[in-house]
Amino acid sequence: MKYEKLDAASIAARLSELKEWQVGREGAAIVKHYVFRDFRQAFGFMTECALAAEKLDHHPEWFNVYRKVDVVLTTHSAGGVTELDFKLAVLMDLAAARSG
Image (cartoon, rainbow, N blue to C red; front, side, top):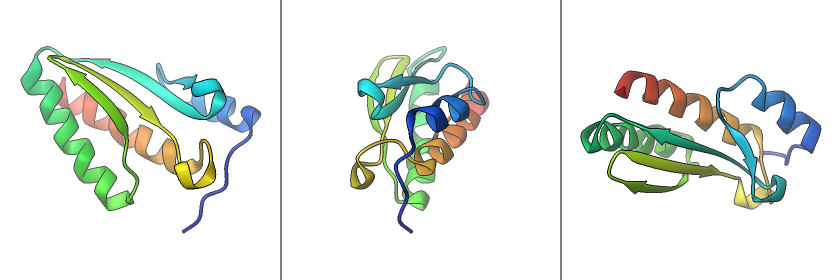
C-alpha cells in the first residue's frame, strides 16, 4: 500500500492525539524520546517494536543507550510523514506502556 505524505496541519492534528511525540527533521519526521527503568525494559520495548514494525513493513530509525531509546519515524518512499508513521507511533506507545 502506498502512503501519501501528510501536510503540516495534518501532522499537527495527529500529534495532538499522541503523548510527547514531536515534529522533527524540519517537518519530515516525528520523534520521541523514551526512558525506561533499565536496559532490560528498553530492550524489551525495542524487541516488541521490532516485531510490530516488521508486520507493518515500516522500520524505525532509533538509537539506544542503556535505558533510553530515541525514535525517528518517517516514510522515506513518501519523502516525509504518513499515516504509517502514526500507526507505528501508536504501537510503540502501547509497547512502552507494557514495558515500563
